[in-house]
Amino acid sequence: DAGITQSPRHKVTETGTPVTLRCHQTENHRYMYWYRQDPGHGLRLIHYSYGVKDTDKGEVSDGYSVSRSKTEDFLLTLESATSSQTSVYFCAISDPGATSTDTQYFGPGTRLTVL
Amino acid sequence: GQQLNQSPQSMFIQEGEDVSMNCTSSSIFNTWLWYKQEPGEGPVLLIALYKAGELTSNGRLTAQFGITRKDSFLNISASIPSDVGIYFCAGQQGSNYQLIWGAGTKLIIKP
Image 1 (cartoon, rainbow over the protein chains, first blue to last red):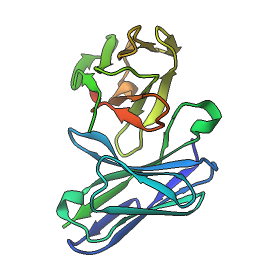
Image 2: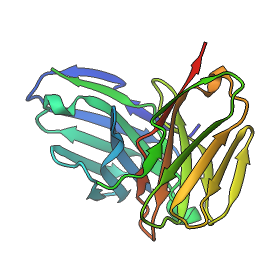
Image 3: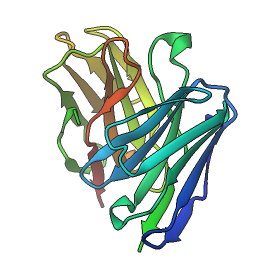
């Protein structure tokens, strides 16, 4: 298994509170991604990073921000959580420069519930 | 956002049966990937396809990259209980490293 961990694995919070999810990798991969997974929608990209301090938006980025201060860590922040952000969040990593394709490897996920 | 059309959405099968699922798009892809997700875990890569017409196997799984580059198929032969899960296709276009995902096919084996 690729060395990817996510923390916390489960979190329950209240509407309006800030939440930060952490993804940590030990593979030294350049690209990191945050997805959310909801029934009927599959995986939707929130944000991704292509290097330290280099990030870009995905298709569902509203209400989320990210930061990557070092290669191994990619943080996802919900500044003010809403019930619509209740979901399972997955981090993924890839190293497309090595193969020119984007084979992504996933972490175990974080289940977030916003009450 | 753009999604691949993955079908069927779910399948109820008997143990020992063969399974077939596919993904289609109106756009051309350079790479097709097939993932499997089990409950409580992240998706795991099963097969990667890089050339039109390519046929690749991984044990009882066989996937093909459509000749038009707009579709891909995954077949599972002689299904067993541990095949249960959700299977996702994902595709890459051009030089953009982002993947476009299908909505998944949920495989359920009848007792």
